Image (cartoon, rainbow, N blue to C red; front, side, top):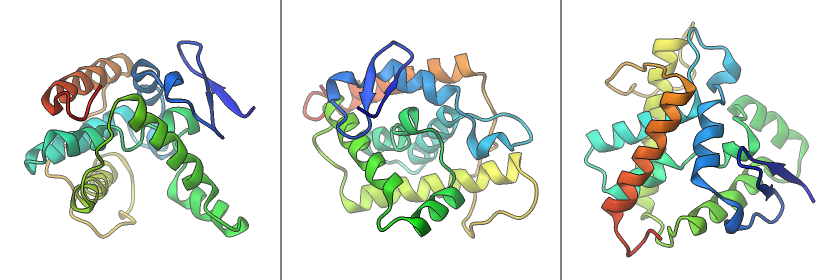
Amino acid sequence: MNAVRTHTGLMVSLSEPDPATIYIRDIACSLSRLNRFCGATQLPVNVACHSLSVVRFLAMKKAPPLVQMFGLLHDAHEAYLGDITEPMRREIAAYATFDVVSRIADRLDAAIQKAFGLREMPSFGGLAWVRSADQAVFAAEWRDLMRGPCPVAVEAAPFAIKPRSADKAEEEFLRTFDRLTIEIGPRTAA
């Protein structure tokens, strides 16, 4: 079985992920210790900080709590796969007959959504909102933490990206998850 062991000792299958093996603490822990941009930033910034910035941007745009939750979890599969950069994804896709990384990420995303009772997908507009927020935060991270011109032509989020320690990012990720779960209510979150 192709599986990864999590912080809490659970085994998560990459080929057939079981929602019963998905635990928010494992996701928060892994994402808070996983650096963005392969660690090439001027200051270390982790994926949990990135996800929290996406939620911040969505909240500024008055996105509903369900869309914010999908923003928080949009990279949750990286807790099991790592943060595979876009150039690497394109390189892998050049050698495969299909996008292998996206297929595995999609399976993990489905298990994550089921594990947290997110049976209701945001509308296409909600998903586009998350993608737009992800891109705006990427541009802000590039502006604040990288050197050279940003590779995407998109307006950066209107706030500074301030890295947090892994422990602080993990705590804030968990608090945000709990808050959004309450705001979404029992109709979509378990």
